[in-house]
Image (cartoon, rainbow, N blue to C red):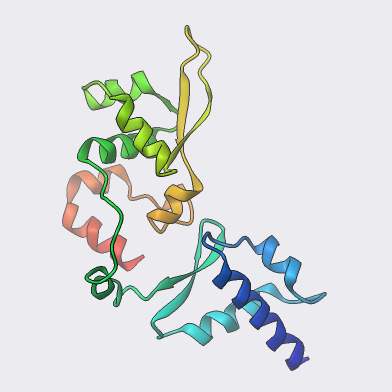
Length: 182
């Protein structure tokens, strides 16, 4: 029995390590032995990495290895990071996240300014937003929503983990601290 559990832990570890995106439980179960206890396998694997330079995290419905949070700032000094989003792109992304599904005119109305196609294209290129249908209105404008990549990029398991809008408006410092704790 222990040999089977050890083999299952190694299989799950290899699968998650080889994947660039979070691995869904259903994919992990496909490589495990019959009647494997997924929770036990993942708990043992997480315990194996606890306190190390890499940790196993559950995000966007799947599992992924990530750099330990206390080491990330040190690595940013030597590893090139992708360009940051512009202020307009971040505003647009926040509007989409909190109001989705939302149309471009609705985004512009909330922002109080026009939205360039380049900004929307950048968010599309980064895989942070995607079209998610058309609104039943004249012209049938495209509805926009966030993607699984958005959740992964911001370390969220689901949209319910977004800070409440009220918290963002009241005390930005405590909101930042709360996000770091999650």
